[in-house]
Length: 364
Image (cartoon, rainbow, N blue to C red; front, top):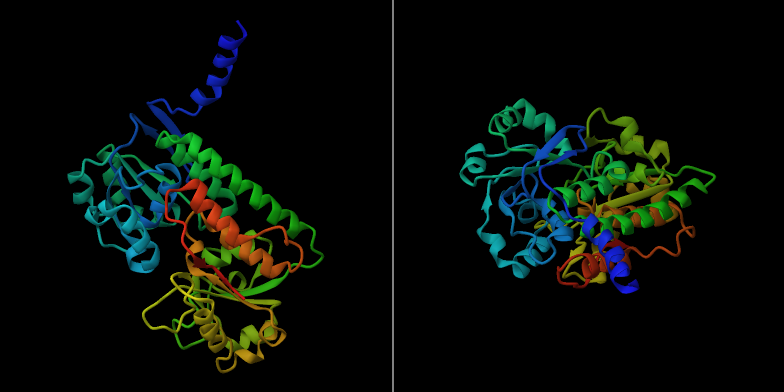
């Protein structure tokens, strides 16, 4: 009698991972979203959410996607090359061709018989202003808002769990969410143990323009700096989400740490982090950028507290790696047990079916 009872006991947790429909979820915007059935025809308002689906629909993350704004092809060509080589069907999916700001082609949504739109929370104002949300509501097409950028600590894990429930992939979602929370707790614990809050200036896509100094406010990379306990200069000075701070202002504030993000770009002036690059290639550009006219007057550059990070960690659920890198830059010697590169390979190898290829994520 013991074995049948044990078998039944073991089956209960497995069954608990299955979603049942109709299903009502509360998304990161606080709205109630009801799904009458498991979504099979999904539109991605921001195509970078394919990296979230790669954590869930691991064998074939594109199999539900009927249309998207292919942001990887526009902004992260190395990842796009990896995606399309692994899943060639990706190239056949309708690209609506918009930016990531909140645009969706309603005719495409209708023609594809869409049963779920996944959208970034930051895109809600634009989707509302253009009437897209009202139109989708009239058509009874649910919109699920997720977020990895505006409030990453609060919403990244929640967003993956939401998608896991929505797509009947709770087991996969929970396995990644557990890993994510463990790494986040380690970072937050280190931040609390520090006597001083480090002041940070972060320059996204450093070298993309000749002028210094572009930065993010509370969102994007600024949000990740704040997420790991840093004081982000851009959050205090910018009226909007992003903009320029004068070199003189940065010099006068005397930040403790200066961080530049980058990825391979056509102009060759940006830190070429990502797949298919060598440390030497990154080093040449890094040294060129930190020696730009006037930057040598910024305190952390004089002190050697200047670092580089792969740009494409600020807007998808692998942002925990970006946070690990920043935290190690901010809390030197406090997080020796954290290995961002190893953790990135762990994500790719154990939570997705993407090829686990060599990649450079940070410098030095």
